[in-house]
Amino acid sequence: MDTRVAVISIIVENSAAIEELNHYLHEAGEYIIGRMGIPYREKGINIISIAIDAPQDMISALSGKIGRLNGVSTKTAYSNVITKAEEKAE
Image (cartoon, rainbow, N blue to C red; front, top):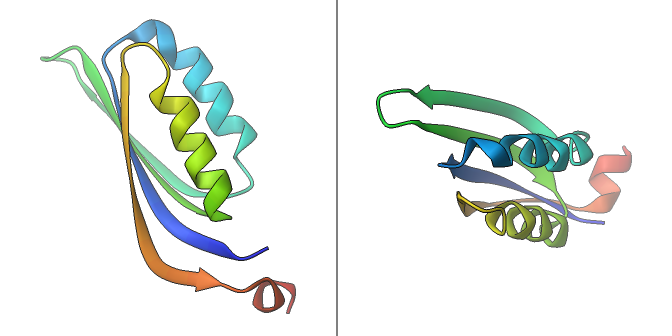
């Protein structure tokens, strides 16, 4: 299946959602290129950026699951870099 590179930006305002968020990210671990988390203590929020290379439907599903968590906001930016399944097999 073709994969696409994207960045999922996440803002966590409800710390009770972090455990479930980490569970979703762990499930997608094989596709995650990198993760950066910044605790913004003065505002009581966490800012997380996930770089991912995965099938587009998987990225959309992950972003949707994360965005449905209470107190969590997410946006996804897709690159035009698409890897065909044959290229990955080589």
